[in-house]
Image (spheres, rainbow, N blue to C red):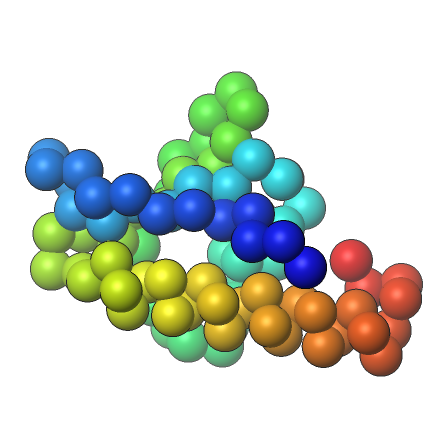
Length: 84
């Protein structure tokens, strides 16, 4: 599975993750709230969804969360082709 959630560090907001796939963005939101209980703010834009983790967050840690999520998606898809 190609990584389709990217991160960047913005001086004003801290770590921001963004996803252009609305279905994947919805599943990532569920993962953050139901599996990890991570605090973040979400913003819906015309072509993407953004997740603001704040200035106290570490881009490396957010990338690890994303990698964990994408690995879970890949495992789930491998065993259940209807999920995804």
